[in-house]
Amino acid sequence: MPCYRCGARQTDPVRGASPWRRGVRRETQVLVCPDCQRLHDLDLDTCAGCGSAALIRRLGEVECRACGAVRIAQADGPVASCSPPGLSAEVAAALDRVLGRT
Ligand SMILES: [Zn+2]
Ligand SMILES: [Zn+2]
Image (cartoon, rainbow, N blue to C red; front, side, top):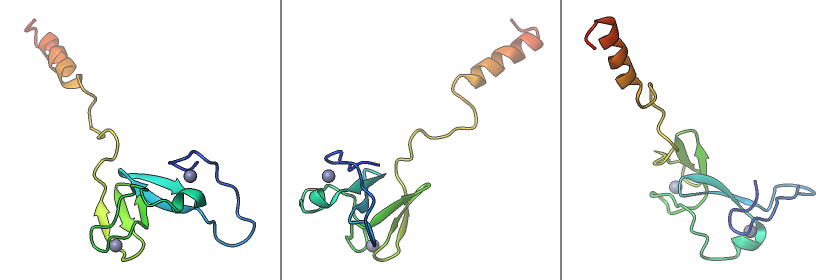
């Protein structure tokens, strides 16, 4: 995953932890390269409890690594629905055919 801000590609750290920072921006997990971390307008989501930007996006949730707070993610892409749009109309039409109402 490249840096969300400048598009730089992450290089494997020679040793130890990666200098890249993970965060959440507009409900999406992002990576921030070391250069962009120096900027102050990163526009990352922050924890409502402690204000930390050390958030992790998980399936349907956002967890704060600083205080451990977990909240439900607000936008999780298209909402999965049990039936695709239009199916109920098709089912109704098929029922009408079966019942001889058309
Ligand atoms: Zn960057
Ligand atoms: Zn927090």
